[in-house]
Length: 202
Image 1 (cartoon, rainbow, N blue to C red):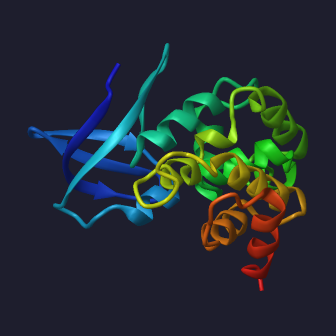
Image 2 (image 1 turned 180 degrees about the vertical axis):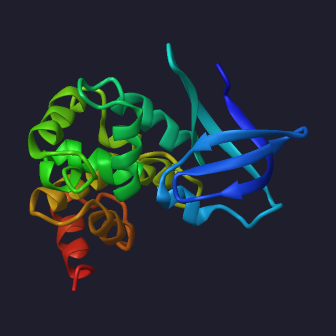
């Protein structure tokens, strides 16, 4: 309903920001992580929003990127995960960390979110595993930028290397960092990339 709000910050807490849009204060619910990244009072901000309409309330949930908004929309399709639960999960992990947790079946990482138990985390993985792929992650978009894999030649091998690292128990963030640190050369296979990436772990 409301795609985004843009205006100056009038008030800010860890869970809510008031954005002055044309003289009207708009309440937008946010995560503590988003709150920490917002500029100071009086500064302009743009938040991509999800509109939640119920019989007893009308709420906006705000995110700094479209990517966070899209993963939030996927989260709230899971039975038992409402907007509050979705925001809670994104308060302890990034959109990409959540994707890797789903891909690798890491219920423990998801259950660190407030109010999210192991069974609910497992349900998130079960419901989203067919809706999330490695190609959705930031590493895919960054690797497709000019100067690195412009033609996408080594994209598949790099993806497999990241998946292998997460399967070995490394966090999504560490796996991404390690693979991105490898100087990719023509005809480099998955095994070679993985060996070089493992060296970046130490």
